[in-house]
Every structure is written in structure tokens, then in C-alpha cells.
Image (cartoon, rainbow, N blue to C red; front, side, top):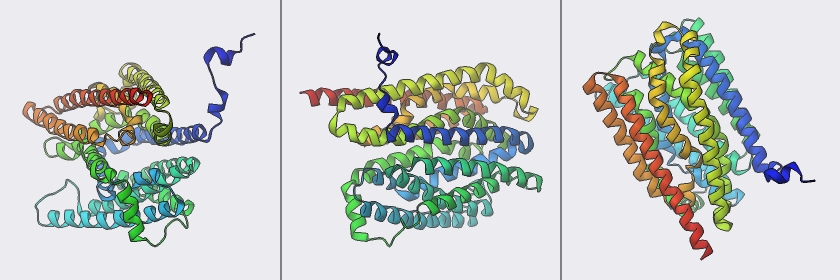
Length: 429
């Protein structure tokens, strides 16, 4: 009698590997974390309102940009680096560089704000909190890559849940204490401190005095990451997060808040899947690129199809039943949320195909692909904002951004898949 596993070509061993268990651990932690943030965020949305969420989104945008700029993406080298001593030295060096660069950037921003050269759309106190948040976020990013290298997936998962739970609880506490404008920011900072403290305890002993010659040698060995990946990732961080900052110059805080909520709702499953899969995929891709290029191609297609199918199902539900439920649950101040969800749907679908395998460009040594794409993505932001301002309608801005950036993601994906296929042919030859 033919076994069921044979019909479906199921290999039970693949579900018993440490990598697969790592995916499950990260997926579980990410799922719980995002559920807490999403449900808690929707409940708190009726208290804080779109205006407060607008300021909060501007703050988060800076937090997403600054750690990428300050860390030079050196944390990615830890995944590729061999040798425990070299990895610990890299970690210590990256943390030091991130701290110094963040202090420098926040100081420059503070001086420019003091001289009225730029307002940055936030107060001096929130700018100070941005500095703290950027330093701790940069540290957490480095620690997560360190944990990934040593396959401490459960610890990464625990930190995600801890941060989300503490953030939502304290965001609620700060609201009822009367901090209705910046309570979301304060709560988020407390949650970040909680996850940082946990990560620091797990990584105790990993922080050492930096051996500068060894650090330089490690960086030089993977210099393409600094030359291509860093500029690309820096542009990507700016391109994906600059919209809330810039539109506040031309539109209301409420519009920024509603856009941010739509962005957040649609991004949750993508971040959930990508955050769980991408780390393990990166490790697996590095290994397969050296031994079995055909398997790398198959793995990549499998990740893409699974991710797109799941996100497509979510987008369909959100634009039908989901938006009616949101209209019923949220107050009238959130009217128009459905229009933003619809406008961003193409963008999230196209991005879902590329996001979990984004690290493949480093593996196949095509870092310039990402650099070109992110320059394009940044230009798309400015084009979208220009059209929105000319039409005096922020929704025009969102539609332009969604369509043009979505096309860019699909072109980048096509280029990556073409190169994977080409590498397979070369390896056979």
C-alpha cells in the first residue's frame, strides 16, 4: 500500500531540522507579537485617534531609518563570518559604531532644529527619545543577527513578544495618565527597553574590547556589503519610511495617522512571514549557493509562491470583510481607512514576492540590483508626494507610490530569478 507521505512527497526529516524548528519558533513569536501589537493598536486607536497616530508614525519612521544609517549594515557580516572570536569582535565593534554614529546624527539634527534650519516635525524631547530608540534598536538588530548566527531562534522570538506586550500595556497606561499626544511613543520606548534588557542578558559575555585590526580584516573580507548593501539598505530604509515625515509638511496629522494605520495593517502578515523566514532562508541560501544551486533556485521559488499566496489571501479578506469590520470597530475619526488599504494592496502584494528573499542579492553577489532599485523607490516617493500635493489629495500620492513601487519590486524579482536560473546552467556546464 502506497504511503500518504510518498504521494505528497513529504520528507519527514526536513521537519526535524534545527532550521525548520527555528522557523517555527520565530513564526510563533512573531505571530503572538504581531497579534498583540495589532489588536492592542486597534483598541488604542479609538482612544488616541489619528492625530496622535500621525505623530507616532513620524517618530517610528525616524527609528526605522537611523539604525540602518548608523550601523552601515555591518550586522549582516556576522551571518557570513566564521569563527566565534571574529563574530564576537564584530558584534562589539558594530555596537560601538552604532552608538557613536547615532549620537552624532541626533546631535546634528538637534543643532539644525535649534537654528530653525529644519523642524523634523518633532519636538526636542521626542528627538531625544528618537536617539535613545535608535541606539537600542540598532543594538537589538545586531543581537538578533548574533542570535541567528548561533541559531538562538527561541530567544529572538521571546524578545519580540516581550517588546510588544510591554509596549501595548504601557501605551494604555500612559494614555490614562493623561499623556494623550505622546503616550504611544513613551509606551513603545518602554517596550524597547524591555526587549533590550532581555537581549543583553542572553548575550552576556559576548560584548568584548574591540580588536580593531581583526575588525577591519572581517569587514574587508566582506567589503561588498559596505560598498553595495549599505547604500542600498540605507536608501531602502529612507524610501520605505520617509513618506510620513514628508507628507506632514503638506497634509494633516490625521491623514498621516490613517495612512500609517493602513500601512501597518497590511504590513503585519508580511513582516510576520518575512521576519520568520528571511533569517533562516539567508543562512540556507548561503549554504546552498556553494553546494547546490539548483536546490537554491527551488527553495527560492517555494518561499516566493508560499508567501505571495498567503498575502494575496489576506489582502482579499482585508478589502472585503476586513474593511467592514474595521469600520464597525473604529470611530468615525478613522473614516477613509478602507480607501488607503485598497490603494496600498498592489504594493504589498508585489513586495511580498521579494521581501522574504531580499538577502539573495548578497548571496548571488548582485548587490547593485538592490542599490538601483532603492534609488528608484526613493524617486517614487517624491513623485507620489508631488502628484498628491498638486492634486491637493493625499490619496493620489498613495496610489502613485503603490503602483510604481509595486512595478519596481516585480522587475527586481524578475532580475533575481533570471540570475538564479543562469547560475544553475553555469553549474551544470
